[in-house]
Length: 106
Length: 122
Image 1: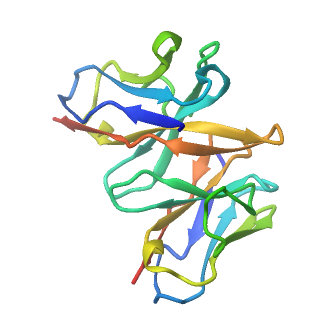
Image 2: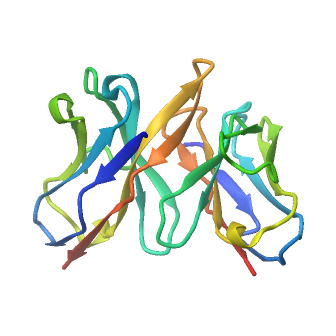
């Protein structure tokens, strides 16, 4: 199985901050990397697919970059509704696997 | 609107069987894979398996192969996840999600069902 490692596991930030979360795959996965946001008690929601493509309806303050094994999710200016847990997921090969999550707190 | 609506919370005893459901609407049920994901209390997301409703082609994570069964009923656009003998360690929230594809290869999960909480007492 491909192991996905996110860092940090949690971070504290303020409204307006620029936030960066990284995700590393245990082997090359090209651009087959998705990012999800999950709020407490809710299902995850996709933000970015194929490493850098913004899902329809997702605010442009979210962006993704990277290829191969190293990827980044950036929130350019943190908003109150962005406090949540973020997950990366590889879609290169089955079994699909997720990172361990990054909790963004106030 | 594309929607996946899951069955309600379940409280079961260890050793019992269970089948939970995920009903799809708002799109052609036969042309998208549907996946199941587990989230144990306070933990991360784990992929269980996936099914293509048109022909019931199913793929399982090796970690869950033999522990669960995924099936589909085209007549009521519903996908199921079932256990024949639950364990306390099956206690978790279970999500279904539709798998979207683009460019023939990139895929992601969207949308997700609201989740079904399964609690198994020992």
